[in-house]
Image (cartoon, rainbow, N blue to C red; front, side, top):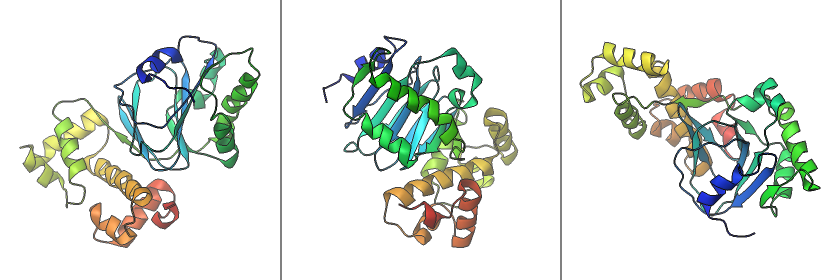
Length: 263
């Protein structure tokens, strides 16, 4: 595999509109928000990662891939530089707009077939042009995605660039194990409960308690995949003093019990 300058890769992705662009890397690269004219499939081998768009945070667990439509501003952050990040940027076609899958950002399970097809491209780097025999294989991946990716991972966390709410969200993220309430968080920032409630609703169209629940479940998924913590410890570390309450909330949001989510 040849070496890449990651900044040049971002430019090279869109240099030939009709191509597919393949990029496999094993080191951590830090990008600011950017976008492409091609749809992006990214799969992380092991561990967990996060996808950030302008309005949401997506958690990317093991055995899942992310789909980022063309034109969506985003950046990607993974925690294990030793693991391969495998990305395919797909050529855009007018009919893409007719299929909802290609127009929505999402996290989806990786089937065994899709995983084998992604790994088959491991030795391919850079542009794959329409006159290349490999292009047919890449097209097959793109065209199969809607039929095998009907159910996205249901948890996403809204975010905002509102200067009044950003520090509140940061505080919540850093104190998820604490018994957070509208009163305690509001007191920290000199907001009344009413003001904080209105700020969440008007800025992110979500309640304080909905946000807190989602943030705790995303944190829990990370613990389940990345640590040896017991479910009891994870419940405690995400602000629950009842394992059954934690497990029931997790099941309602994720569709699986915490024990079923562990690798």
